[in-house]
Length: 190
Image (cartoon, rainbow, N blue to C red; front, side):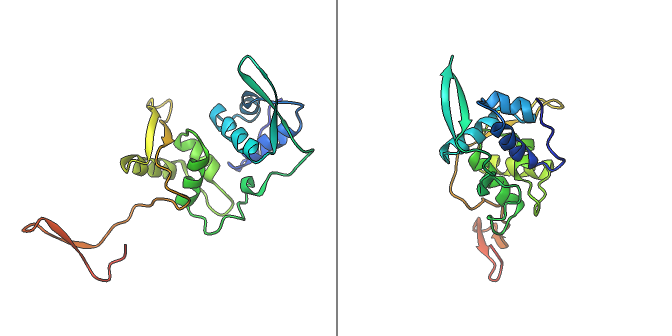
């Protein structure tokens, strides 16, 4: 059974949640196959749902875990709803950062899909730029290099400093080459 989520990029999580509720038991691979998401994305959802006690392990076979939803036809928990109404002051960087903190590894396309909400549309290009900025700043590590034209790089967050997203700032300053120093201009915003 393949689920075709609606055109909204964030419909994948809800499609996965609906799918697992219709199953007696499931694995991450089953979710990935049913929704078309990456297996790592499905595994991250399982990790989060298990942590929230929304699902539980029912058996293990050959190093594969099988799960079951703990309640019957439960709605998707608020932290995973596509409207993200509980998240104040949504920004592109804020949504990307929250998604990075939940996923073990990700590509910019994965981030764009899982960071888009009704209020904030995160493009693939915006996700790529944010990943490049965080990589240069030492927040991300490349797990798998990109193959041009075939695959984006896979990243892992290695410097999780908290809930507020790191953002690039431009500081107004005067550079004095005689002293080799910068002087902040009063009134300039940080």
